Length: 278
Length: 323
Image 1: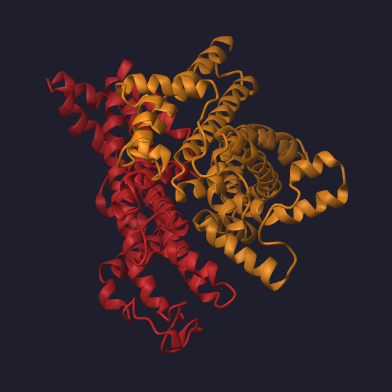
Image 2: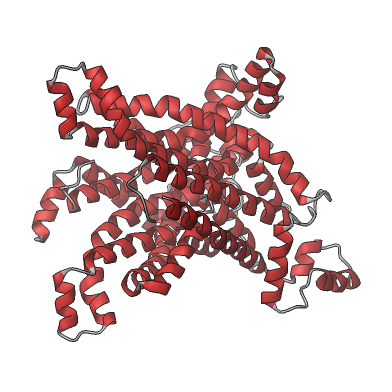
């Protein structure tokens, strides 16, 4: 399919465009966070606690008098980092196992499919919680835990793509020409499975960002003083009577970011597979 | 049919064994000596050495796992390090509050999501459809802990209509008591947590109901029903909904896992004394026997519900003969 045609379809899809824009903005914010934050996120001053939004502090201040906006800007780094890396890990595990299951079939397929069933028996957030509890709370534990929780989605997508593609003529042709299974798999089958994978992974980043925020909210994820969106919402809950702004803006930041990834994922689905209605 | 049922039933056991293996291995990831982990930090050197033998930690790992499985099968989850009581007892107390919350959330989901989804499909591409679709998208994207805080702010702090924490007498006990007043009071406690828990499922089920209805409404038999002069109402409710309902039912069942996962966050915020709050507290206190017991029980519940869905699906749809 011509690349320019895909781009044209993307351009005409308002959801995809809006989602893509939000995602780009959040990525920009995460990369340049220290330059964008108006104040030092750790700069405390009890004289200006719980301030409402003002020209000096656009989103108000928290219980230590720290600038809410600066903490949110810095907090985007953890969300994006965990979102991208945990989904990267999940894709790596999922694609490897899913490809093996779909291509080799038989006993290997059964074993891998049953393993997927086992992981699906746990509510994702609960398994992530148990894993982070075991690994100790840190950014890398959260990434590893979420990667271990979410790989099943990608394994299933790749496995079913391969089952559908395995009987196609171009695969048969590749094998008839004497290509080994590794080459057939990587050169001919997997490139054709990338579309659905991209859609699921985009939505998956949004899910991972929500999950990280939930862990931080519960106090079991990335630990203070590192600012995280979930952690800020939790602080806001404790001081809800003094200032509702702390949790409101942090929650809004999570929602808009996740909405961006969801819109982009849904949009990509329409762009890559226009025949499928919703 | 029988063959499918038997095969599906037989799959349940290896999956549960796998669940136990994952929990067993997760616990082994905890840094340090498992005997120390099990006893807490107060154990003396002799106690720890004794615990190692008692817990079978001097045995090879496969033997340990076999012992562990046999203990779990006998309902032996050990004792809570923090509370001292048996883990099964602690779990038993927390199970009912979680189940009643999940049940109420499921009721809310059905009552809200089905009509919204059907309405959106029947009025496809109208402003009403757009509002429902965008609303569902926001619902999927909204972290439920933030929704909980907004709900507390509005209904508890500003309007003062509903309590923001606690369970009161409990829904199931109130239902059993038969007192309408008590049930009403319990519902006031349960409403906000259940609504919070239902947020994700409402959004998902609404989207799916809309999609499923749209697909069926485009089919030939629906056109036939319309062309023979049936009212739109009859077409939608008597003809279309019937066939759109199967996928909706499946997804509704799958929400049970989402509800139990959401309980971890919801119960922590509203101080609801169920499994979710129990496991978060246990993790904070490093009470590993309780963590392990809760995770196993939740996985068992989810697997059982999934099993029931699969089996009922096969009964409802005779085309499924093999899995």
